[in-house]
Length: 199
Picture 1 (cartoon, rainbow, N blue to C red):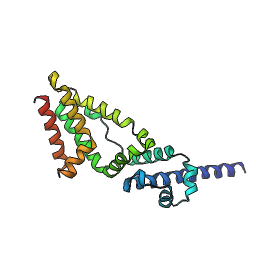
Picture 2: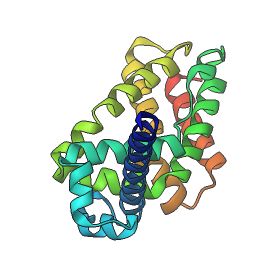
Picture 3: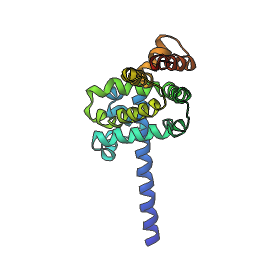
Picture 4: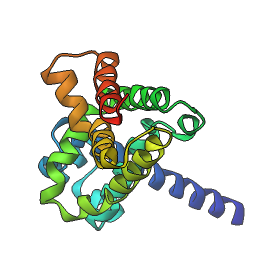
């Protein structure tokens, strides 16, 4: 009898976890298609194949739902690891490697990133979940700035160019509005930084 009860409890927990995964996956899919601000609980429930009260029962607060969505999406689309870039001694080659990987990631996650960035200013909870992104980009910019022979008066310009090169909207402008391939976009930005660095 005890074993049967344990099995039932374990099975119930597994089903609950599976329902949470379905809801998180449905939320991520809708965010990618139409954006967080336009996603309703009814739409999430319909996409996940559950009732609205089930969504609220598993995620009574918006923060929990958005966190589960974020975790689901990042598990399927992990950002590039910057660790190998730090090992590249030549700053230009380091920048080229970093931008190549980052622009490929921007392309793969374009719809989600564009929707989230569009909606974050009107959704405080979503904006809070993105607070680490600027810090990560600042640390990445600092790592990419190492090794350039930059005159003191040009350092702010080079740092600004590096930050601009890393930005999603920069990639989007070059790739979508200017029609460049990712490799060409990389070369444009490497050339800009090289020029500002005095190379």
